[in-house]
Length: 330
Image 1 (cartoon, helix red, strand yellow):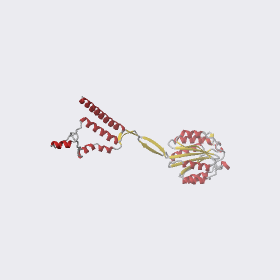
Image 2 (cartoon, one colour):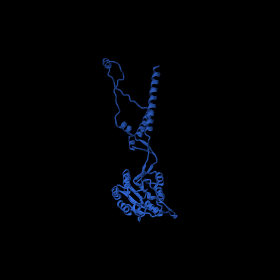
Image 3 (cartoon, one colour):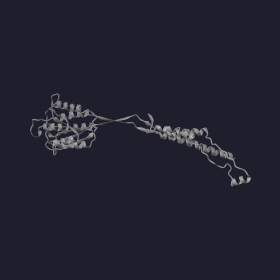
Image 4 (cartoon, helix red, strand yellow):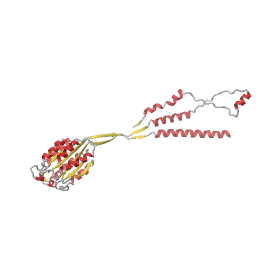
């Protein structure tokens, strides 16, 4: 649609009429006969010069051109604009970071699929996490893999196919055989420090206990709580195992409770799918809708037409006057 940025300036349209009515006409004294020593000659002849007046009148064409030009100039000052249709942008209000354990134990084949087949833990994780990523199309997602140390595989991004591709290519042991869960929490905190979204969620998945971290997991959880990062912890290992393969459920529960998240245990692929379904439900999509309407300035059109009218009129009038003087001189 079309609009004026300063429509109140149209009140200046009748200003020339107010000036014409309220202010007195300009008076100028000039001699009708221009000869040297005019006053002395008139005194010698005993003649007293009289006074007269010449009133200049505008032609109807000049009045029309001036009136149109004034209207166009005032319209240009009011800044006419063309307002285009609104453009909307959805801005995510939540960042979700996925931290996946890639220690050597993730290749253990003890996960039962819905069809009864037994597969490795990492195969079940790839399938379930890829499905979760597909559902979170309106959130920014990031990905961390950890073993001996944590590694950021994908920064927070809306490029979900990239995150899904990275997830599908994960292999057990590529980050080392051990589990650095506390250090992975520290890396997640540093990644969240670079974002400004109001809601920050970390989904931590592991099948063992912390055997390689320099930062204790519970201390990292306290830091995450101070920075308002919610951690959901998922354990998929064997709590009855011994050594590095034992799932540390107590630590995972404390991490979740400390940060306001939830702890889940997945014993097979169906349970793991149910866990991510629950996480998808308890973290609804939150977005901020930004709307703006581009504006195209049009003031140069009425201003250009006004200048063109004045230029054409005065050039034409000047040429006519010059031509008329030449004819009379003949």
